[in-house]
Image (cartoon, rainbow, N blue to C red; front, side, top):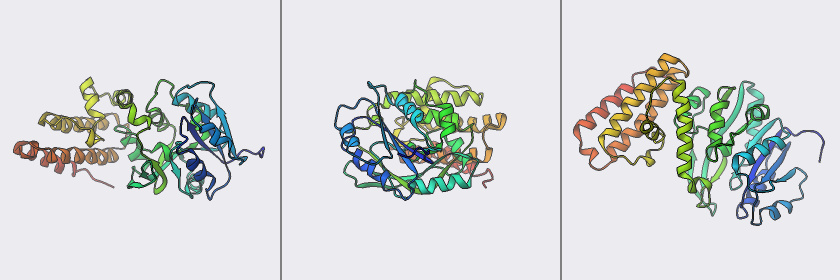
Length: 332
């Protein structure tokens, strides 16, 4: 292996991914951009993952093994420690890079010195590799990404590339067994600008073995912690119920409350967020209004489509009036 540091470290954390791992590694080796290394950190796999990795003879592949299962945040931090590249590109061990991902993202960084982190759009495939969603978008500009982080993780982790110096300076929070990528993005957003490229550069795989499918309760707890910290910076008072409802705003499918109280609470809550930001000026107010409007439309559609609620004339009238009200701010 060359003693010169590569421009990009592709970091892949691994834990029992024998079914998908070879396809993931092959997608990296097939990149049009070739000045990279692949750092794989195995977190105590008990399947054939190690054997699959060791079968590759490419000198750009570097394998590291945790002595025991340490969990994903510590494994991610080990990857950052071992990374030698100017940039670190994250890829999960069951996902696939499209051939121009590294070339596209490095070119963007070279042209935008203010950018510290960069994601992209993606599409989803299932366990067998069949496309199940052609386009999964995220906000493009830094202003909108920063506001969107109030509600959800606004950059797909599988598409994320960042300047290694920034990632190593901050690192992942070991207390976040879930949502450690989201928590890191919240801190990184004050370190420099984020952007998402409106291009599909990664195929994200959805399957039943994913950690996100099996630890949803822990995930919600961590999202509440992240949201609470952001809301305190806005000096916004809230209850535990407010937090539970807040993290559902960006996930209309997760809304389980079907009584008018929830939708009226949401209307008031979003208005409070807008007013809090007018007072504190943490986020760009135009971007704030745009993202809040987007969230409100999702909630309103959920209300209109919920049996029983759709027949509640007073509620529908209130929803209609509020949707129109959110259209008033000037948008650029």
